[in-house]
Image (tube, rainbow, N blue to C red; front, side):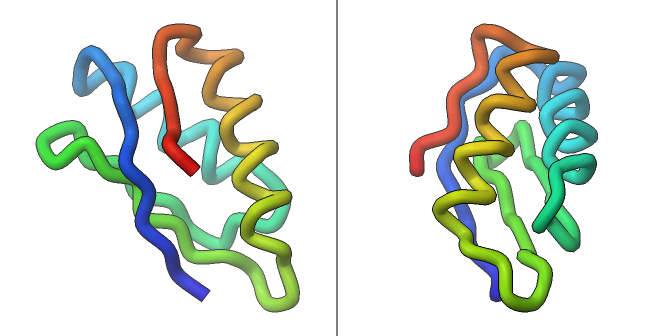
Length: 72
């Protein structure tokens, strides 16, 4: 399953940190963050619960970039 989320991030470097944190989260097959469009596209592992996985993605992203936000 793939979903797109609106994000708020201050710079392209921060977006890269968010992308790395999202990709390191269990349940995420692939995450791509675009600073230009302020969106995060996430493909979930088979059988993953998107809402639960995205809560963890948000926590992991906040660890590397406190000012970021993912609108779930």
